[in-house]
Image (cartoon, rainbow, N blue to C red; front, side):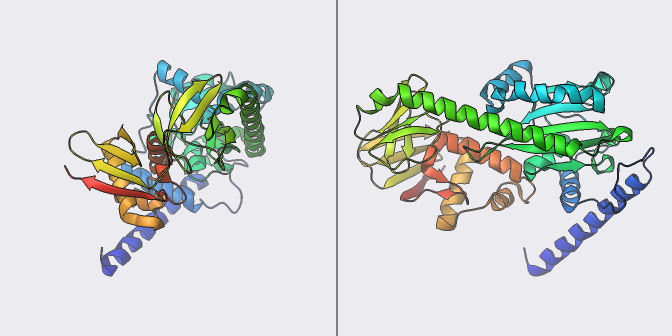
Length: 400
């Protein structure tokens, strides 16, 4: 794109954002009833304006509100795999007394924006369900346009979304507040705690309530990690001692103990008998033990050679000295590996990958989810912050 086109595109975006801002302010001014819902100096924040613009780009209609809903089996799977499962009961106990008193709807969402658990004031339950404020519904930006869940996932901090800031007209009478649950061990966002209420019954302390519940959940998640690692360290000590170089890790790839190597905090989650690349160890094999895995080198570590084969179903062939493993990847993952190879040591940010993959920078949440899936498949062959191929990894391509 030449400079003139870039300037024109920037001018058009500025104009679009100004129009959106005027529309939101107009709706907030004409809100009925509108008691203390909006502050006197109210102005919609820039991230909300940008979210509206992305919703328009994706083709969302303001007159249609149909978030995706996962089926019961998928919901059960997400609950079982989420680290939030350990904090669900504690969070429920905290909010139970607040829901009816404050006319609120509560939800605990995973990192994809799917509501895992929820509860509603009896007077709001039917209205909330009609709007898909229910367990199994997906409230990230791609599914539901501008909502507090999507905003918190995009920018993990406590946030509120006023009624007029919702993109869908159906949510125009709802005030929402949400806060991220940070997994302090993995460094990832485990999910979102959110509350919603109708704007004629707004409670100023709702944002503080969301942040407090999220903090409680973060402590529970962290404590559970430590308990699990401690148990694994105790039960796996004898097994680990049988190897010269090995890691003892849990099902999430968190390292409980190590022998003969400076251990990372976390590796890609292992699978029984799977060959994986682990930084500092080379190609490794995982073996199941009680409560976790022993991950040990399958041979001496050396420079890692990756051959990306695009003939038919894409796959990568990883060579580490005498060891070879083959991993099947998706077309999208093959595309990402090519982009990372071209980027070299500088790597790519999620915004840059979004532009390469989708043509703009509005899909960073999708990029992060895709990169998480890719790293679960290829392990430490891909590093993060920014995303790049790991040190000592060389990639060659066999074209289609």
